[in-house]
Length: 96
Image (cartoon, rainbow, N blue to C red; front, side):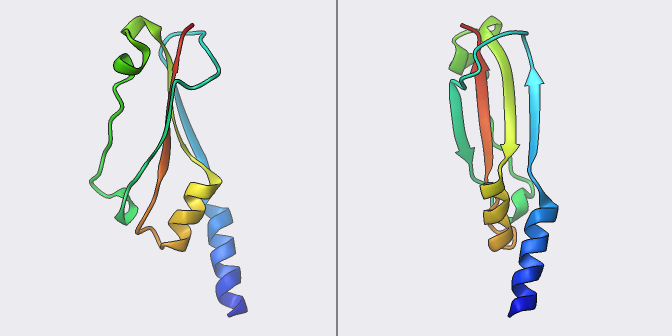
């Protein structure tokens, strides 16, 4: 049992967190206008979810950046479910 716990812990730490940020227009608020968890199943194979940043920010010129992140909790959930459930955070930042 100790080896299983150790193996799961090592796997969780090796998988790590990941953030991808796309800067569309320089500047903007550090507070995300849109911040939600997207839900993926079976490692997210062949799945996609889209967020309409123009709708969130009211116009294309108001979009500052978009960001996706796999947080520690997301990775932990993915590890504990062996990838059957693998969430991802999606954020949109708008200019003031």
